[in-house]
Amino acid sequence: LVSRKKQPDNTVVTVKDEQIGDGNQRLIAGPCSVESEEQVFTVAEALKNRGVNLLRGGAYKPRSSPYDFQGLGVEGLKILKKAGDHFDMSVISEIVTPGDVETALDHLDVIQIGARNMQNFELLKEVGATNKPILLKRGLSATISEFMNAAEYVMSRGNTNLMLCERGIRTYETATRNTLDISAIPILKQETHLPVLADVTHSTGRRDLLLPAAKAALAIGADAVMAEVHPDPAVALSDSAQQMDIGQFNEFIDTLRNEQLLKDGV
Ligand code: PEP
Ligand code: MN
Image 1: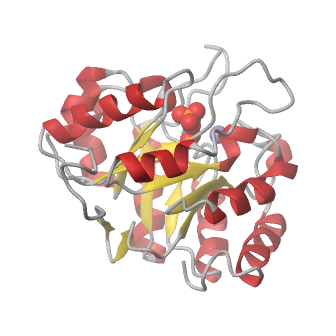
Image 2: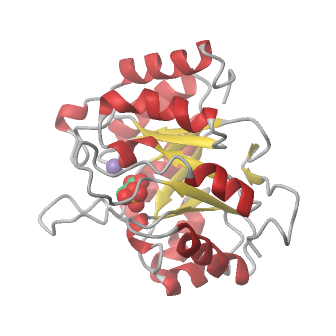
Image 3: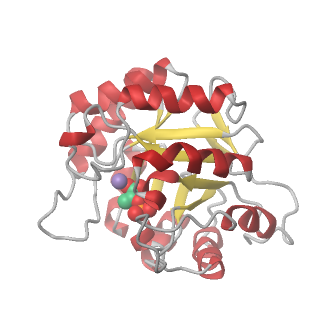
């Protein structure tokens, strides 16, 4: 079902009033984790001021260590919903178990399935049985074919509102957190009809590489770029080395627009 052979025309996913995959490349931004209402509102306002309407933030955080911040859970979803309603933005957040789907449907505009859950087949089936837009991330060590099969799980249950996100894969290279598989973007665009996104934050794990990675992703045809923004990354409860502060985000988006890689208002 995900194959371009089955459907030659691009799938365009509608999120509130916006389209992803319609040829206008977009930006999705927001903090790694939802930490407080004030934090989310600060970032949301900064994004909105630049015409960015897609706000991300993690409420259920699948951390490598059980001793690290695990996220605010449903409280986090409530904060996101409040910010989305207040600023008229769409909110995107990850869920990690099939039991979270119902709550997510009430609070989110896009459900994210994270890299660690790309092959959580029960979760894929559960979100596949809804019609909520789904942002499916590539697994840490997943081949493109495995990634497409995970997407097939979602679509086979009836949900066609599906987007794929390249977020870097594990390689022997340690200079970056993961290796952004830039060629996966045009391959997925050729092989599937789904929108293809690039997460420049988790792929590079380096603030200094967010802009060049975003340029590359947009130039190679990504339908949207995802990047993390925090009011004060130094005190962030997760991913403090790779989030942009608001000034850096403004420079980031200005550069992409000045170089005509991103249009105004997206
Ligand atoms: C995230 O986007 O918050 C996240 C945890 O990303 P990934 O699943 O790609 O590691
Ligand atoms: Mn993060």
